[in-house]
Length: 419
Image (cartoon, rainbow, N blue to C red):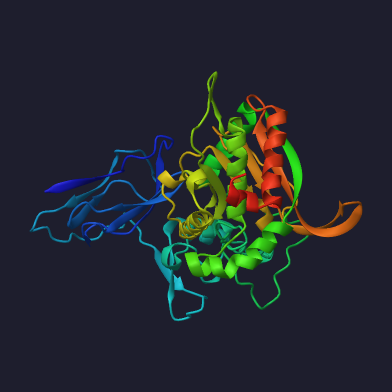
């Protein structure tokens, strides 16, 4: 019996997907639940498992093909007498090349799309560290890789314990020991690469936000000294009790929740000519992943303990690093927090994530001189930015909401007492 392999139902907000790489060739046996192919949407990469045991007898859509939900991309023969058929050159498998990683005897797996990009750039796969599953070199790794002539720069990975919900992972290129070849002064090389689905989706949403929202940003500064002292005092006991490190992000989330409860319009959204007030608080935490920006959602953040928040953020961080965030985890949200401080940002104006109406921007905490009781003292200060949709949020509510966040962070005991 022949079984059609179809693209599963995608999220309502996802129109289509791209086939990344077939894991099986025509004629190979497959087992029920075994991953046949990776599918990239504008939010996540999904695995498509085999529905039955059998033989992959036909591949209808090749790597890189654009597909939609319900479309048939392959067929499996599940008959007991099904025999492997001769392999065809249709579905290229990942190419293994020598790896320059820690285990010099191992081999790096290069995905087909990545292989093409690396060939075009003239970069040996051995000079690229893969961030995909099992060290696979993905399309994103290949796009991030820079030729030696361009002196590739490594991006540091911020610590998840310092309010970072995910590690920012980038492909690293090994620089040759010999000096780079110098191009003639009249050479002006350029390089054109297509946007990934995720990057195109990010661009679309950012333009949508700028064109549909009346975005205004208000700023305030907060002394992080009380939070730092509280965290230092209880960090060890917290980790021993709850099995997770106490970071700063849980304080920002709790402070945001307190402010949103006082000013519900900041947690609201616009739907046509209606304002939708949400009786729950779902906070999106902007994180960086190997594929780009992602915003997983803390559901019912107002009901979560600080330990629960830290555990969920740690889970999001690991999933983002491995590319395993699900569509459900990335859908929804009534408010967002973006922490540019982990990259050293001092000040920014974050862009609202539609259909939300506000977003909190957190920045780097630095020792700065401030005036207290008529005296100049040094305090660890953080500049906060609240971007809001002026169509439904007046300046008064926005300023007071940000001031409430500031007050909660400067007196963190209030978060515990609910005052």
